[in-house]
Length: 373
Ligand SMILES: C[S@@+](CC[C@H](N)C(=O)[O-])C[C@H]1O[C@@H](n2cnc3c(N)ncnc32)[C@H](O)[C@@H]1O
Image (tube, rainbow, N blue to C red; front, side):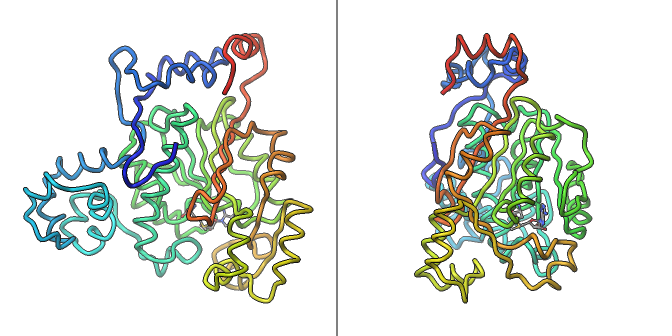
């Protein structure tokens, strides 16, 4: 299931308590295949994904249609727009509309926007990317979790690993309240700003290498957007092992990698080549290493630029990871539930991983009787 601007079909959540019991029995994800049918169970229905419907309800609840019409120069008054809008208008209200109009921003965003020039140097191209890309990615990640029967909204605790300016987290905090949200980041200024801007989130200042100072098996869901796209090979394995430690049995890890799609774009597209620090490299050589070894890493960011933010200049560059490599090397920690190549504009792939539940009778029982998809 993919989210698109026309809206994915919406499903209702499993009731958290039932889900919790199923997980303890070791058969949660398996049995929930049968349960995730969109049928409200025991009368409990909640929006578990960030969708145009949820965003629309917010505009209406905030009585913000006039401000939307004004900011987007819709050519019709708010009361007409509220009857005739489409998903694109709703998306633009939260993004370009909220950037243009302070009045609209105040109604739709409870949390401040960052100073991108200062805080986004390692993560955000501009404010449009922060607000718009953040919304798109939050929709994608919440949809991926749902698709694999792990609802962000009903999770106990969720970690945004390498949160940058919290551009994704801002929408989860706003639209999917419920879990305890945590965010980790190397760049200290992002941690300081985040803690002020999002007081409901616990920020963890991490080193560029493990560990993160948290107990084992703390999180139900961890996501890492555009972190494994940057790490040197041995170093990325250390981080995977650390995220495995931090996840509860049965927990979900959603992350992105660069793969074959973006690598092939580097051959032809100047702007892609530039953003992938590709200049001066032989495309055939990189492609051949990718095909043979499955992991290609090179540095290219200016070391001074990285170290001023505490980033590890020798181990933070550009990484490409093949589907085959992931199947071969990551499955000692995780089950690969999905690998969607080119999912983000043919630029990044989404990989959805699950930490196996604790072995035991209940787990075996669950596996035997409820075939996992
Ligand atoms: C491309 S940005 C992505 C930020 C955020 N996830 C987002 O999608 O906006 C990469 C982030 O990784 C952080 N980072 C750098 N080194 C890291 C490391 N060793 N482990 C985890 N995160 C790191 C950077 O500070 C930066 O915020």
